[in-house]
Image (cartoon, rainbow, N blue to C red; front, side, top):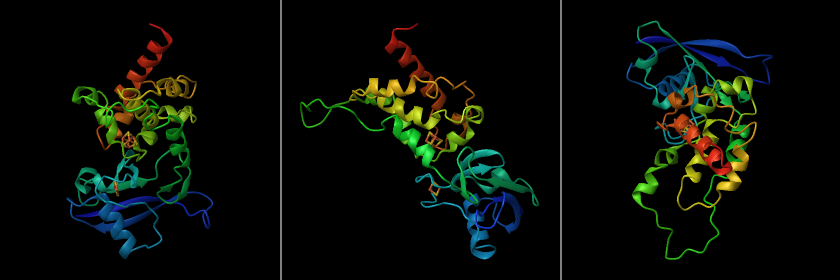
Length: 238
Ligand code: SF4
Ligand code: FES
């Protein structure tokens, strides 16, 4: 099929502001949007900037906005975003992160917020046996949140960040939950102090946009609400 891909372009060296550029692409409907972007870069415009690495939904580097929805270009089939010949697919960089060039954003703030919740196991107690034992049932409590690939799709999808840019964001909270719910972890208080703050969990209003955007099917909104409950329990509130 023949489609138009309309891409937000921005090169800070030559552009005063972002603008859109259209490319006509002949592509198999079963191909992925990433294939179309690669086609443009190889055969039409080598100056187009976007990140990609694994091309199989594992590294999280090619998250972008596709027709106004956040997701991975390598997990998006052309036929799911362009139904008919001549359709236009609009591709833009993730929101709330500074654009470095075209579809490439500076992820520093996203990772700083992630780092703030201490995304690692905290437990100074001596290991009784060879390892810290955890039952399958205990693991199941937080299992989906271990699948995060830090793509920042949820961060861009969250409408709260529009009015509250310092909100820690869905990914950081889901990753905090991953350790808060881990039976082996002892760092709850350190994390809850970060999360029980003006920019922590409380700005979340249950829009569910993060959950819808997540390419790893993590139940982010549910994990955020469970984290809110943990804070209340920790503080002895109802
Ligand atoms: S929670 Fe999902 S959408 Fe958010 S960063 Fe992790 S994988 Fe990406
Ligand atoms: S390129 Fe790695 S997730 Fe898409």
